[in-house]
Image (cartoon, rainbow, N blue to C red; front, side):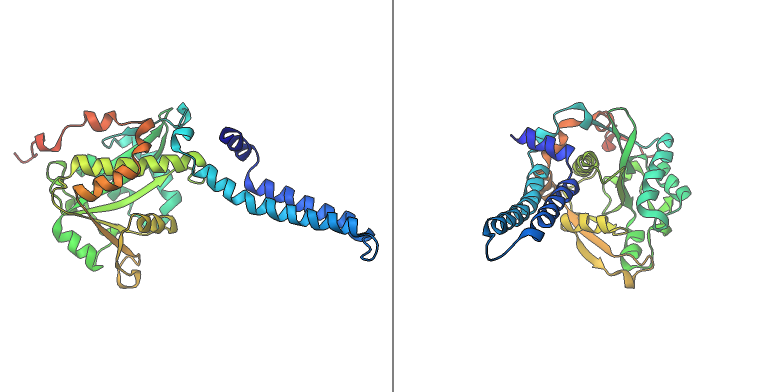
Amino acid sequence: MRSFIQYLYKVFPTWIQIFATIVGFTASFIFFLPSIKIEGDLSKLSILILCLVLSTIIVLVIKPINQTIENLPLDQILFNDSYSAKILFPYQEKYLKPLNKIANSYYGKSSASSKYIKSWYEKNPYSLVTLADKNRNIIGYYDMLPLSDEFAHEFISGKKGEKDIRDTHILPVEEMKNANFIYFAGVAIKDHHTQQSKIFSGYLLYTAFLYLKKFYDLNQDKTILAVSATESGKKLLMHLDFDLEDNAINRKDKLDLYSKKFNLQNLESNLEKIIFFGAKIDLSDFSNCEEISSITPKSA
């Protein structure tokens, strides 16, 4: 039954169903109205009322049906290879062009200059996580920057914004594990209005928790910082229970600043809620990546 409903939902989107209902209602109204006589033609009036009631019921039922479909168990959605994806990690320069295209569609001029962003990733190639579909086309990303304590405090105070971040403010790979402040610089997915991209967005969130667990020492609290440059970003931060750290009006970048402390305990709790997103993701790049504890500092 659910498969049939899914098929109908795919073939007849909500707006088409509503449009058909309105057309049916209007046709019934036009057909019956001219011939209705209240005194002697109650049968036609009854039919009209019945049409009105049925049209209303159909419209009211459509939304719950769609919500049911959207909330179907993911094991019934992620059943074919169209939802397969792969993490590309760490950063490689060839990822920049498609990622910049995706990022610009989200953030526009609110993000830092591309030349500075490139320098972030060159300083710490582990700061960027890229997502590709089954054909290895890049479809999304997120970046998390381990900030020096000094710059993080300036950032929190509002004196500095994302556009002020330079590679000198970012900890290198061999030091990031012990960073106290991590800036969640951005997350974006291609064609984010589609059902498939909503699933891929879940992949990004799921892998972000795995990323924090693997590459940071969460035995100590880590403060994740993020600004809401878009309405969807704000909703995501609120959904993840981030606290409003400072209002846009007080900040140089004129963006609301949010923060949340993560440790191993609350991260595991969040991860358990979305563990099903791991079913179709190839995480081999994470697994094959050298552990930070074994990386020798460049100055050594």
